[in-house]
Amino acid sequence: MQKFVYEYATKVYFGEGAAKEHLAAAVSGYGKNVMLAYGGGSVKKNGIYDEVKKILEDAGKKVTDFGGIRSNPTYAKVQEGAALARREKIDFILAVGGGSVIDCCKIVAAQAKTDRDLWEMEMSDRQFPDEVIPMGAVVTASGTGAEMNGGAVITNEEKVVKAGMAAAAPRFAVLDPLYTASVPKMQVISGAFDTLSHAMETYFGNSDQDNVSDDVSLAIMKNTVVNMRRLIENADDMQARGNLMWDSAMAENGILKVGRLTDFQAHQIEHQLGAYTDCNHGQGLAAIHPAYYRHIVKDAEAKFARFSKEVFGAETAAEGVEALAGFIRTCGLPTKLGDLRSKVEITPEILRKVADTCNVIKCGPRELSRDEIYEILMECR
Ligand code: NZQ
Ligand code: ZN
Image (cartoon, rainbow, N blue to C red; front, top):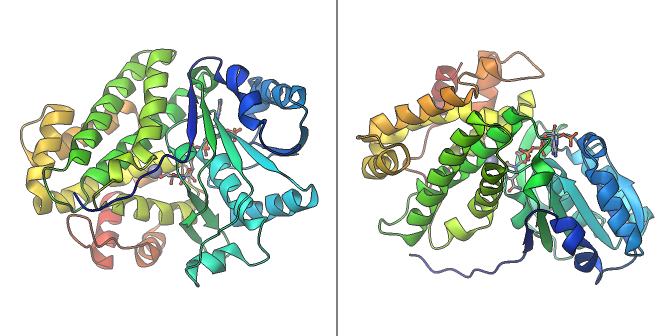
């Protein structure tokens, strides 16, 4: 294990009825002006918006709506939210949604507190916000784990870059599996694959063997796969949705990453693919992972063999990679880039741009060249 400092920044309220039971008290310590942020409208259809708004108003809050945050949130939407937060003198931001809404709010919370351009500040000057509007998250679609960390993934459409930005973690997260009941099965599966990917990308980071975090990562992978299988059988299995909700938070709350390096190369490729195509994050990862792992399996053979055995009951390292590919097929997730919903045709020229602009990770099993990333992407077509 390497040296680490770890602190949970986010208080979690998990379980059925968690918003009704805890939300009023959770927001009570903050000022009167609350921004209620949400996505494209699912929360209005399923009643969550009305329920949350009533809790806030009954708690004496003045609620300002900030809706229409779309999947793969944009930097332009962040600016819109920050302007609104300044204008309405917002004291607290409540994100009600999946990773996209939560991520957008994290950066709104930071941008509203500075006149500097946050993208330039972070990407060019490597300076990070020291003041934010406090925020909380009510999770309505799980998978990213965004509710328990201080990172956010934002698409800068002008620059055609989708990248991680740093802000503050939510002060609290409300995790009610029933709030995910209306999420379509394919979105639940896509989100859960994202969770599986987070655990795999952490586990395959280049770190010493015999690391307790590896054991925890493998446990999260196993549980995620088991519960994805349950959901494929029965989309209404709330026990499975609840397990996946906590798997999701566990995979990205930092606990798996303590004392070790991580990989996240598949994520870096997928994020840039998302910048060009606006594809679904979990589905993009599903299309990329097997091809990536076929390239690096020999560079971490012992780790892959352990993964194979413990997660899929397979024998060898290579069989584990094929078991992962088979699992993706069984889930009905995209197995090729051509299966992804995309705003443009995914041509070799687009893939060359993705390969040339994505981040290259140095602490995975092996550092890839840009040509090899292009090769991997072409194999995913
Ligand atoms: O927009 P609405 O209408 O709400 O619909 C959403 C959206 O279409 C729908 N949805 C959410 N809750 C629902 C529901 N539909 C019915 N009933 C409900 N209760 O689900 C769709 C997907 O939502 P979205 O938030 O986009 O999905 P997800 O949670 O997968 O978030 C994806 C974003 O998170 C980033 C991704 O890159 C992507 O931009 N990530 C964030 C991370 C982080 N901050 O730690 C880590 C991840 O690796 C990831 O990169
Ligand atoms: Zn992810």
